[in-house]
Image (cartoon, rainbow, N blue to C red; front, side):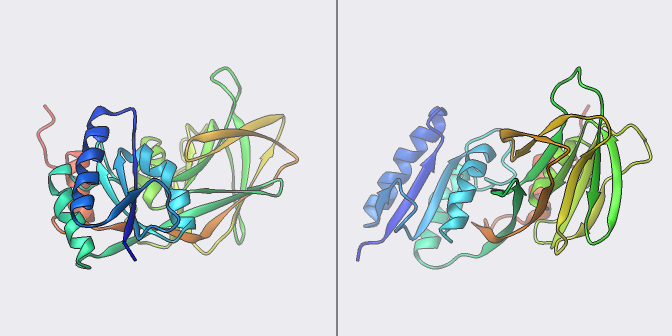
Length: 264
């Protein structure tokens, strides 16, 4: 049976569209059929930025496929395979010469509905004029009640996203932990905390706050009230990414965050 590959690309980026055509030609020359459906494919190629991979990650993980993530964005923490090396990576994968890295994903449950994310879930106030909200966070035991603009529960993958901007630490992607990072907390001694990934974190609004919003990986905010319990835990699904041979986790951090560069 002819091998198939699914290619997902950012149609709004000219470079991604061009490289899709290059990739399609490459696989065609190798006798591999290119399709847009993940079902039935041997693996997935994602061409774009981190946002493109975030949007595709749920479907890729749910189909238990692995992905080659080619960076066409401005940063590329997740899509860290450069276009100049992508064709060689394609060839290596077709020859079976590659390694995979598994990334934890979150499962978020609210009002009986479940949502999946790769980076984080955010519970935050509704707008700039709304007062601080109070969020009670519990795991195996009561953790804390945060008075802040909001709270981020992030995976190690998500530690270099919104959480990092809010002052959270960087966590190596293969660790089995969750990161809780407050957003602009009222009490300056309130700091981010890392907890065991086996814990289920429950969030509830307290005090006079009537409502707030949750968003998983920045998508489709959902209004919640004090009556709701938001449960956050690791999903049984994982995103599998092909590791570029030329780099490792720390070299990616040095490159993307400009560690050691002269800033001025």
